[in-house]
Image (cartoon, rainbow, N blue to C red; front, side, top):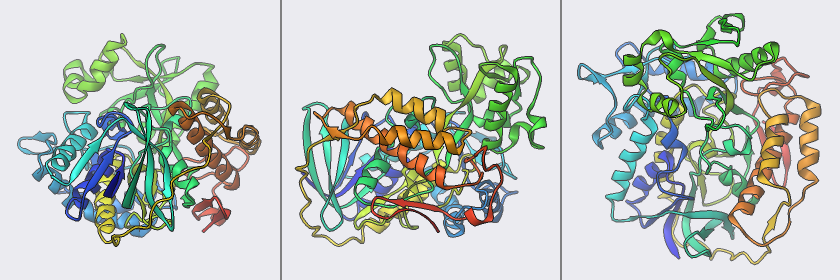
Amino acid sequence: MNSDFLVIGAGVAGLRAAIELAQAGKVLVVAKESLQESSSEYAQGGIAVALSDDDEVALHEEDTLYAGDGLCDRAAVRTLVEEGPAAIQELIEWGAQFDRHAGELAFTREAAHSRSRILHAHGDSTGREIARTLYRKAASLPNVTFQSYAATTDLLVNEGVCGAALYDAASKASIHIRARAVLLATGGLGRVFLNTTNPEVATGDGVAMAWRAGAEISDIEFVQFHPTALHVTGAPRFLLSEALRGEGGVLRNVAGERFMQRYHALAELAPRDVVARAIVTEIERTAAANVFLDLTQLGEAFLRERFPRIFETCLHYGINIASDPVAVRPAAHYAMGGVRTDLHGLTSVPRLFAAGEVACTGVHGANRLASNSLLEGVVFGARAGRAMRQVPAGAPPCARSTAPFLAPARSILEFRRLAWQRCGIVRCGDGLGHAISELERDPEENAEFTPERAEARNIRSVALLIARCALAREESRGAHFRTDFPAKEAEFQRHSVISRDLGIRFE
């Protein structure tokens, strides 16, 4: 199969890029599962943008830089906040229905924001509404074609990336696609960890494939653990949005005491990494399995209207959040690092682009500011699409993979448990070294291809990248915390860069 452009991933970043690409040729958008199964669909918190009367782009920039703890790329942040307002207006023109009050856009505040600048849709379904809007727009364009249940297993390289190998679930066959340019928009890597808010498709495939293709990976050690994921037996680690605390929800330990004021002046509205570590510390101090998010003072009518999806999901698992404190503990949520790109989405490999969570533009630094992720997907998805249009036609023939399929022997569950225990919220050199030894001692061997083995290969690769870079960063900064190096160090106010051929460096 041939296409002018191949977009791998059907979330916000991939769909926004496809809309731009449709002006320049045939676009094929492939999804690992259904077109609706992406991290974008699960984004509850909202989308941050400086559009309210009391806000300024400069303030949004300042808040983003502060949250990034000294590692944000200033040019990337400026691009995000300056192009954000126009991107939101465009979504509204395309039919996005953001929540309003008295006819005006309704803005709320979340942790580490100095202004109320968070837009929501249907209370807590913002990502779903933006994805719906972009899909409807992309599907209306005759040059855009969609292929669901087609997992990309490898990039095909010949003088740069110019294609990909897909596994079609229906035919159980491998399909090779040649393209003028390829965009990775595969989303996150939360399923590398045992506990995560991410959907099942978020197994770090894009990072692993780019790594195998020779691309540079940057800041991969910075993984954000959301402080408040549902912790109920038999229930998924469902995200309980930061907006719940923004609206007045409080955290209590097993004894019913509020504790966040002991850890940070902003209490429940402290940056996510601070809240997550505080919860872990409190759990260990009280020998409990979890802490509780108390929303009972907000009232049932308000909670049902403001957070309908969260309310109904918790009710399904036997919890009325209007009357019962909710058991929560942190879970892997968002990767600040990923495939290194410039401001136009171009990676270090010719003809290969990346956008959204799989990419590392430097916009998030060491810790993402709440609700900047959807904005990043929209803004940088569009920028990548425009840049891909400039790639000249006539890509060299893609190399058909004749090498045997290699996969690790151990199970996905073993890798996820190891990553959670050794590369999680609190790290140390000994634990990271142990993780590296365990992951390296399970080399990839010839195996019969299955989708599960492909995912195991990717999870192992990404876990190893995280562990190696976390061990090399001998400090604590943002979402990366080491007990043996608890202080922030000026010499590490640089980005980690790891590549298959050159190893790790900081720059």
